[in-house]
Image 1: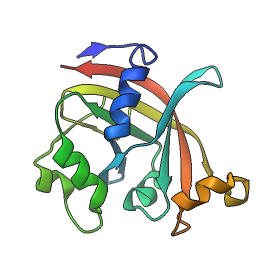
Image 2: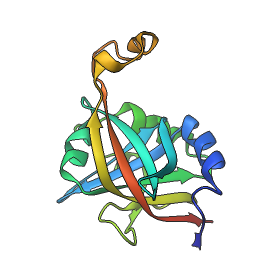
Image 3: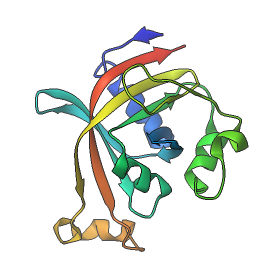
Amino acid sequence: MKKVDYMAIAEKAMIQIKKGAFLTVKSGDDLNTMTIGWATMGFIWRKPIFMIAVRDSRYTFGLIEKASDFTVSVPSTDMHDEIMFCGTKSGRDVDKYAACNMKTVNAQHVKSPIIDTPGIHLECRIVYKTAMDPSSLAEEYHKLYPEKDYHTLYFGEILDCYDIG
């Protein structure tokens, strides 16, 4: 494992995230991984922050609402099938880890584990969350929410960022 500066890998990570990455959340004994394709990385409140968006219709939403942290695993190997599966199947209905033959590894600073795969891994402590207010959303973006299942935004302070080769 090699520690990396989150801003040094930000562009590379965002390119991969557009193709899909794994958001993993653990709350009590409940654990789930979902695919994310939207995120933001930056510097807010004098801290490195990774912001994710989770729709309230997702199984992960119930977990992250009770959690204090999350991890993001950005694979450097081809995990297209796993990314597609975790983005189209719900943890309510299927054990994604068994179905995809994926394993987790304990994170170093948070309760939520990382996906055991080569790539960039971020460990984040939730410092702020806010539900989207549809009345404040630009009109052209409403088409992204035909089911009216708007995102809640979770701002995670990046506690650790590393590359597992």
